[in-house]
Image (cartoon, rainbow, N blue to C red; front, side):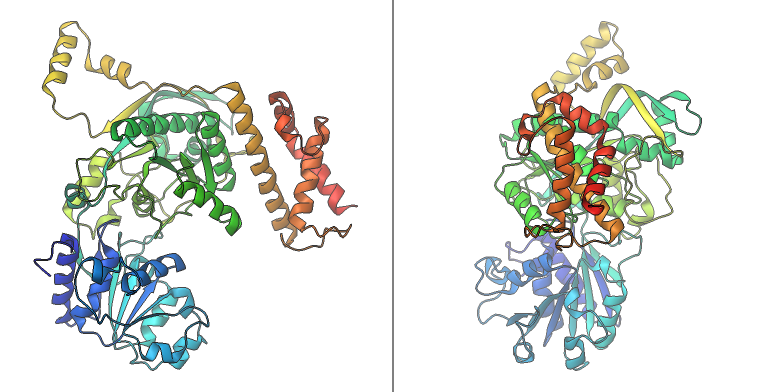
Length: 586
């Protein structure tokens, strides 16, 4: 395998580290491979190091389990053994634990069993009860940073003699717990970039020269400098919440991310490159989508509150290159693969670096393999200086020094200290709340690009001439980097508001049903026996009240003027109240 160029450098090195681990006394080990470096292929060859009789491969979710099964499936032309020419037929016999489609006889004739952890949960799980304790001699956990949870511990206890190897792109869970087992191999992100396995990244930090905001507790309007913006982002949770949820911040991130996307598309000659945005919650998703659509970009969102069909429809549009922007709240995580995501726009709050790196990982997969200098393999992370998109280097104690240097160059900000280790989900600031601040405006938002421009003789000569004419570096930088807003036409603004109204109404239906503990798919509210679900009845009632307010009939939403949409927005609480009364007091 050492001379097999189809097996990647990190795969060869990880296998060698696993091979050495076989002869050590420890039961459990960890392997860290960045996104795009061949983690699935490494899992496929690991059983050979142990000379395993029967291996259990466990994924954290169904999507990843299905991907892993393909690496072992002889019917798949891209199966790793064939693609990398590691071994020839006969291949290890794979089987998948999936509901009732697999039986004990299938497992008995297998060499590799692939499943997701949900299939093996519970004290009375039929698989765990029926299988002998020595059934597996090797357990391989994909996304192994999950495996400190109780369900994974139960599985490890069931097969006490099995050796264990955990694989992950980050050794830390989002709650700050370290992946179990001694980390025996870690492939640095910096090497992965140089080899062309992952995209070359840069960060764009939005630095407002000043920011004006109002403190709710005293109503005082305050204007602060950039240094104070950063300090408040560290110290003041109310300020942080307002930063990421304010319209002023949202529009600057939207404009900057569009600018970066347009630049990348032009340099790469690829108009299918896209933006992925990280939102706070369902409502915030809708606001961000509206902002992008108002600027003429094709934007949509996926969220766990939407049903599977709605999310599948959006994902199909993404795969068919019918979107410029996809917005999500921790929905497109591990196992999601779309290489043409090129810009990561951060509208949310991350309490440590681990979930942030997971999000950035969505734009790290290369479009063209082994081509580190190709402009299509570039990625950009856009965030605001006043949010807590920062690093906690305790997350990287198990990473190599090269990775620490890389992320330090990507995120050169003051270290923030947070008490929680998961991504914080926060509602946008509600007007009139007593413990928050309201961002009013920002002036001269500068774009700080990291890394800075590389040495260029012609550029250096231009800089010299500017100095001779008396221009300082600060003046030149401000002139070059000031963010130009993306123009918003009135028609696009109206269209975006109209689409956002539907999202807002759906969200309100969800809130009403959650409070009243009502099933969306039930028929309790269908008193006229028209075979309408509770969701359809409630949403229809709110739609009717909105139409009634502006004198419109059903089906005329496409004709709404901006003034009518503004009236609906201003009286939205009253619309919901009247609709709720009509449905529940009828």
